[in-house]
Length: 244
Ligand code: C5P
Image (tube, rainbow, N blue to C red; front, side):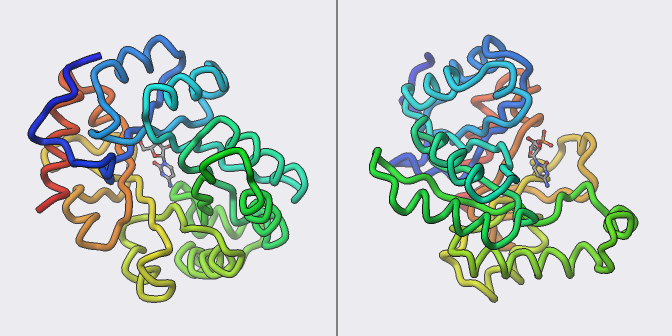
């Protein structure tokens, strides 16, 4: 692991930067993580890496002191979803998420399971509202006669009423969500690009600074860090811009 001492690191593990470990195997993920440090960033493990590397990798990241966001977007019957978030808690993760589309009973079951969790730190439980890949025509195909924006507001309300800790959303939705549900209801925002970097397949991007100004609680950044020649320097630069 690299030298953890850097003047650019936020103190007390409080970085609002979550690095998306979008790799297809553990070796590639760990090669990147070796260059990082828990005070520099948190880590997100999604479906691709989890399906290939499994819970062993998540435990390893937790063991190295990282706050891990297990981004598996659970969506199932209430009992199964509650058991899944408990399994996530047992891995020691810091944050886990479920699809709001699973409904209030599913979200409440997940929340109640975590509320009675005795095994250690209770992870934050976050709701996914509407995937940013979905537009009005995708929703219409599903028989939903609402715009994505209306559905986000509707789902976020249900996530809040179910007692979850926040939502994954676009930075552009943060102001509305913050004013409705308060600052304590977290807003986790992907679609972030430091100025000067390419957008990749993200359609609407904002810079880390803009995301903070718009009211993001945590930003999720993948390729601008994972594909960089100096991932640690990019993390440090982003952390600096978040402190402005
Ligand atoms: O590489 P990039 O910064 O675009 O990665 C963004 C991460 O956030 C990916 O892991 C992606 O799956 C996730 N994400 C997203 N948009 C959403 C929800 C999650 O980009 N609406």
